Length: 329
Image 1 (tube, rainbow, N blue to C red):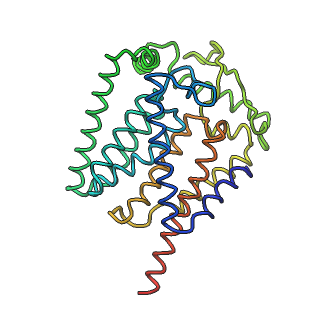
Image 2: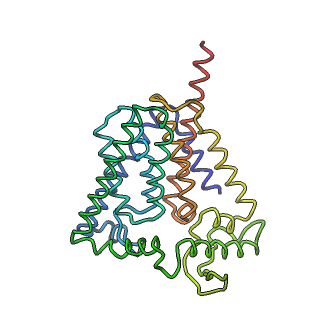
Image 3: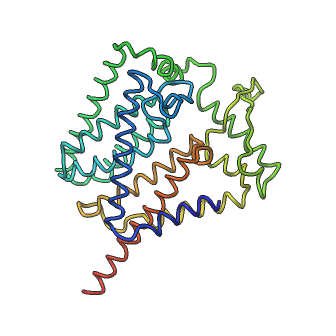
């Protein structure tokens, strides 16, 4: 908890003005764009950095790992907003297409959902403005068309074998042709994790302690088999490891950040950045319902909590500017 708090307040304190936020934003975007290109190269011809294959720690190949991919959602939302409000159209289209390719190459279900949510939430926020609706419709149709074309090219390429198994698995899950659906698996894992939490309800089992084998149940709720892995739910894992006290502290933290960063004014060209951070934070919370990176991947933890501090600093800077202008009037 100290580690999390330190990172959050580091992001909050280090940001002194809007230029600092822009600098951090651009550095992060540059890193993510670089990561996409490295990931694409890694698909075409595996490369080695510091003696080990890049992104070689998973059971399937990917252009961008999900914990990096969810951060790209921030720039997808920003690019959509900037495009519909008539800012740097070509550059923003390139960013959206680039990150779309990366997400297709991630082969991650929860990342697909977050990607779709980024368009849905952004679209709903601008639905009342007709001329902007047309632009949003055009960019959405264009990106969808590019995604279909990229997928068709991938299927017919010599590299499809690297993606075929994972995508066939996803198709079988959607069509119900698998022994267990993802809902069954994740529900089973969460139930078993909560059972373990009941053994240490106040303080939890301790940070880093988690079950490695979970019981899966059939439709009659009879134990059918076991399954190794994690609960795939950050909040359930948080409750197990830190107990009800730690869980309340973290939930209070997220609610507090939400209240601070929620925009006070309607969406317009001047507050695109505020809404971008706000929408990203919502999707970030949703992403953690199906993933455990926020307690198992140190780099992801560091970036996300520092970013939460930056987002909070942005909201507080906007608020101070608003009150200073109001006092002058």
